[in-house]
Length: 260
Image 1 (cartoon, rainbow, N blue to C red):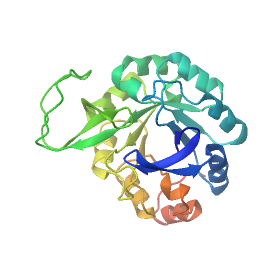
Image 2 (tube, one colour):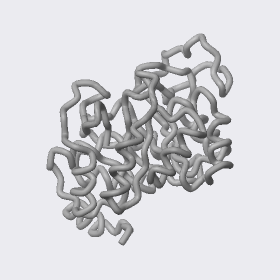
Image 3 (cartoon, one colour):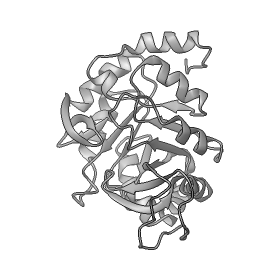
């Protein structure tokens, strides 16, 4: 769930946001419908340079009894400690992992890889794109062929970092999971970026969560077929366009193993 001003919002490419409701009430509803885990992402915390949503985490922990992760504006070890102490099961690190990769290593060593998720937020880069002039933590080099470039600050700022290399580096530093958000597919309901998922899944040995683009049950099956270990969706559920029980029944029919 994307959170802004304490409310769940959903748009396309992080703009044209529509209000979807109270995050705790939606969390309880999705729990009752059979969702396995929840993810709450404060999509403006980094842009506004403020702390993430501690009070919301406490409310969720009190009222929703399934695992949940939280992210947005996570920049320090103290941020992670506070979120975990207030009840989060996992913490997602986004822009801070790009700017300061060693922060991921410190977080994993301090709290364990099992609760550290790194958000991988790329856009596809066409063959004629030249990299930004600023230096990259992963080194320079020209773009060759179609690739994916990491963006930060809610998809507003390009970094010049190759998404596949970034995923490899995050695994090496101790990330326990990767949340792969295709900015190109965000809110489009055109399907997950299967090429991106396949490229990352073939490169790392930690769980990959597919995000952005789900529009119908077949898209989830395609994501699992591309190597994803889990699939995240938002607007389909927020606006009651897909029933969770029906989705699970479809996936079981496709012989995809689900959590019981």
